[in-house]
Image (cartoon, rainbow over all chains, first blue to last red; front, side, top):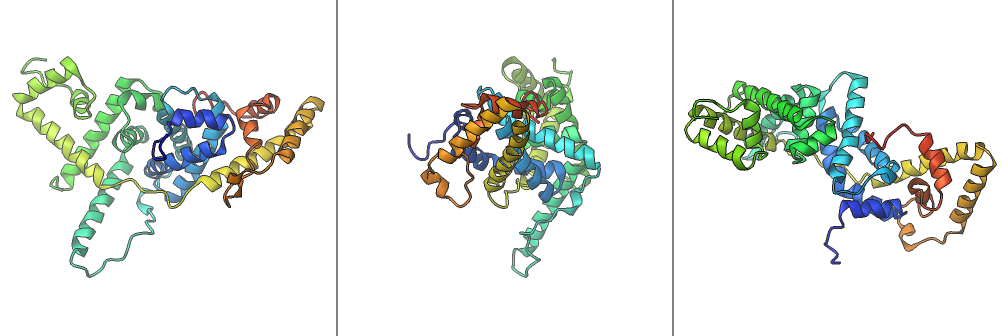
Length: 188
Length: 149
């Protein structure tokens, strides 16, 4: 096997259950960014997202011997993450979407493309706010579709819903986003 | 769907998401070929999807593995307490596993600074070679396997 050949997730889970720590490590490092990105958008807080990201992988390891390798690892993992996020949202009830702490954001500069970058950042903020305003279930379905590129059937599995329910959630989410898009000018 | 019946919103959404195939997809395409209104909806959906891509997913600030490994190890240590308290059988089983832990030579991988002592302890998680302790652990957990949380 070449060094760049990816070991399938299921194989890593099997190795992990057999006691191979490095297998779990590979899974965590492979999936931490997608899981974190999903949680940031669900929770609106990088700190909470990092906290729950860690908890998601601890639970992944804790439940590893119950996982049935069938090529559905991504759905299974995001089900854990989604449950964590919903549980956290239920507890705090308040969504702090507008208080993102993007430490990497630089102050406005005087460079020629500063204006362009500022506009891009405004657009990003508008998109984040639009997503944040969606009801929780619509938001979760949208994030799984748009950023994790899951199929409807996989989203249904993650969220414990029927495919038609997922289809309706996504339709409503996109309807709301289209309205926002039109309200904000519709030309960006 | 004939030329006058617009597909329902969720159907257009599913088409836009690439979820429709065969006859369903063909029916939408035939309709949209002759319907400005539905073409406009598809164009709006595409525009919103493009817009969503602008807000690219955030990257993790750093690797989360050391923290995950440390928490697993910590929880595993906490779980050993009740196992000892449950009686002779569990205590003996735990003793055997602890003996294995002590007796396990370090591997080259354990030299990494962010490694945890895992070689035998992972068997507590997995159940291989220490089913009784895993049972103790599992029975104290909420039902996580079925719903993944």
